Image (cartoon, rainbow, N blue to C red; front, side, top):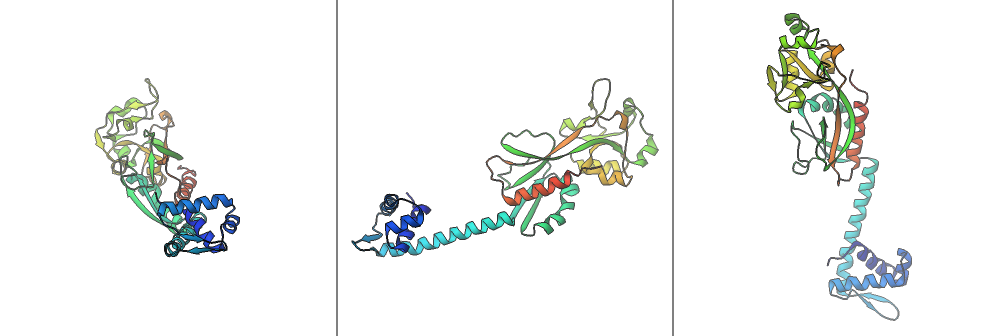
Length: 298
């Protein structure tokens, strides 16, 4: 059985104070408790560390060796605790973040400069994946996910929401005409996702309900690809506000069928394992992100 930090602290306190009684007073323990701890340490090491005389305690050769090592260990632990305390006040260290490429490009990247200015001691490592990532396998501290979560082993912190809209470019609408009813979409080029199929259920009010299952004329696997196709005039797409806020502000994409569109908002969550202690560097990053996302997209 290995020695513990408590046993090393008792041992050094006895040496420093010169007696078990004085060590007990310094540590706020009972004399019998300190004596038992010292005896247990000697039993574990199978050696005598202190010679007890009627007047004082003397270190043996083994005791001298352990004392040197124990002081180094305790000093290193104290230094580590001080460093961790400083990090709580001033977060530091490497922070590994994973999210989809569109969310990284349109949401995270524009916020990086401001975040680094506020927290210069944090080193960001930004990774992109359009699939759900195994956080442990990829050594990811926190992942940002858009849409419903299914993995119950993950802890989720809601960061905000992003609305879905049907969008097309002015050039496409000038060429093909603007649809005025949901049924009119049958005469248009529809752009959709190859996976998951749920993204091809558009937020449209129609005779069958509030979600319209469309059969796209062109399938893609990435929201960013879909956005570029819509910008290029390839057709109508259902896209999230976080992707298209700038395009709509510039008039490069315009909303269609606004009166028939149901307000559907995709949840945005930060996820990490439930048994993960939320380090200061993770917490401050999520706070910063939530603050910006909370402002919303118009």
